[in-house]
Length: 177
Image (cartoon, rainbow, N blue to C red; front, side, top):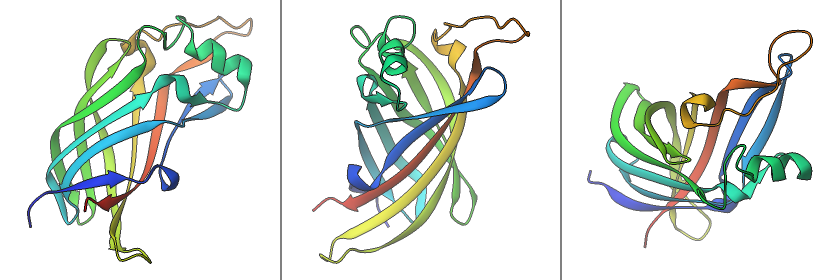
């Protein structure tokens, strides 16, 4: 089968993240606005072309003060660097429905290669007869690699914000008509 274009259904998709806070708990958040360009054969993603663009101003951690700080130059600097991008460079099948998707991630003007574990969740027709496919993905990046270095030392030792960011994706896409 050949690659076809797929359109992400944002109302049935999400990009979530979590980070250690105060060395003992995790703080979670989402990016509410993102877009993707996907050309793929869902039955075999090894030849897929996948690109994501995330609107950094759409960050939402359910705390307005924290979100405002995350949008500032201390973190994402949304005025000067309004998006995070991902462009796949290599996709390796690791089992029947699982893949390692490697690509260039750009945050705050810094580009690094990262790999995400992606699972093809299935394919079918929605009630309107449109072909849909589902994918989930997970990976970890180090925020300091992308000049996201703001932090504070704790009196008890350690730091306020962990370096490792866990990213989780749930994507539902429909075949472009």
